[in-house]
Amino acid sequence: MEVQLNRKDINERWGITIKENFGATYVAKLVPGTPAGSSGLEIGDVITHVNSKDLRTHGKRQVLEIIRQLRSMSMKFERSKDSSKKPPTEEGAVVFISSSFEEDAATPPKIAREESGKIAKKRGRPAGSAKKSSKLKLVKPKTSQPIMKTMLEQLAESSDSENEQSTKNADVELEHQQTRREKLKERKTSTSLKKSKKAKSRTPSITTFDCPPPLEDCSFISPCYVAKSPHIDPYSWEEENPYKQMKNGEVKNNGNTIKITENNPLDHLAKCAEVELTKIAEDNAKKCESLQASLLEQEIVIDELKKARLEERRKIDEAEFKNKQTTRAYKSLQLSSRLEIQKIKEDLKREKTKNTELQEKYSEMKDAQDSVCKELSKTRSDLKKALANAEASKQTRAEAVSKATELMLLLQTDEC
Image (cartoon, rainbow, N blue to C red):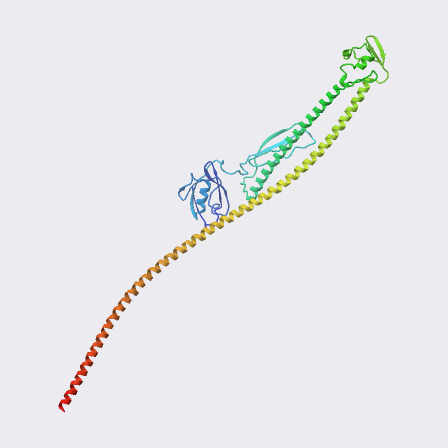
């Protein structure tokens, strides 16, 4: 297929954007109301020839340079049936949706994000949730009009994608930091418990029959208890434990009964355990409060950082847009300066041809003047010669007249 394109001036835009894919240059965008937009081209057409010049082996930049230098061109293109090289439109776009949900009824599922031709990743609940699961859905939009994106929309999309990537990286780093902190806390707690157990095992336990032994020494009886009751073997505590055999305030040990009415050791152990449990619960509550406060502070800091990053990204996008505008203006100025230079060169050529013509005419006039001068010099010399001859003839005549007069006078005198 072939199309003829014409524009009034070189500064006028063709209204076509070209992209390269697998070595072939194809039409990616057309601006309506321009020569290319009203020529019959469509998005996805592969450009093969321009003015009978094969462009299938040329790159994108070479094709653009060739097209920019032309004022009128005949373009040959191939229109493929499949739409693999065409940009995504709303009709043929496949939208991937990832949604995260949980079984907790208190926290509703997060809203899924839809993006044309992309997978929108959304994180679920942070570490510590009951169950997580992600699903992918395929959605086709209803409209059939192609998506025409401006420069600002493309910049906004690129900034959004970069912001999402930065936020994801920040979330991953925070998760890693939280896991590391939890592991460090677990290690510290385990080491502290081991140290406390070693210290307790090293310190000798001093117990009496009235006060029960500590929980760690329940596997054997202390030497103080053996001193008061020598009939008990210290290593037979688990087998013949008087606290376990106690019934109705009495202890039966090998047939001997000992009354225990005051300071029941099991009650004392239960009270000690309750006190320790309450202390542990209070410590845990304090730790939870401190952790929640630190998490809130971290979230506030993260929000501020995100806002700062968004502002910086917006400034960068504005600067890039301004740079693109300046580059376009610079290129247009370059084109205009080139045109002006070409015009000046043509004027200089014309003036040079005029000067050569004038020089030729001047040389001809000079030759004519030289010839005239030569002729005048010849005539002058001839006139001088004629004047000299006339003067000589006058002198001869005068001499002849004078001689004649003398002769006449002589004759007259002779007659007299």
